[in-house]
Figure 1 (cartoon, rainbow, N blue to C red):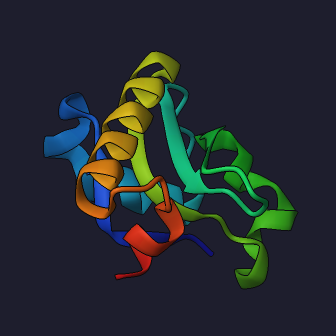
Figure 2: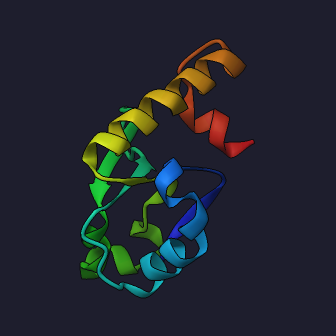
Figure 3: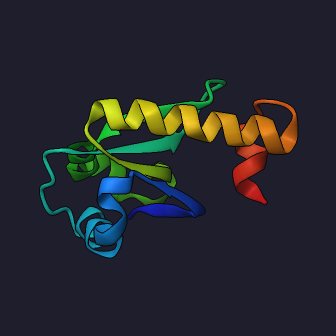
Length: 104
């Protein structure tokens, strides 16, 4: 079970293949160069995971599924996307309250 934000951030290189990438994440298809950015479960802001982590049994339960706010091509792309997300959050809210930004 995968949950996506309505304000999903996507790397420019994956923009045209967004639907296909999301489908593969939902169905557990391998994507070796895709990383996901999710809201952190603890007090951190965001977490970066390799897409292969979603194949683990732990993440198949709805309560354990990460809330995905970004999809990136490669780890470097994921870091760049996190920077873009945090800049947008700061610009719109004046703070780094990522959870409130994505709950709107």
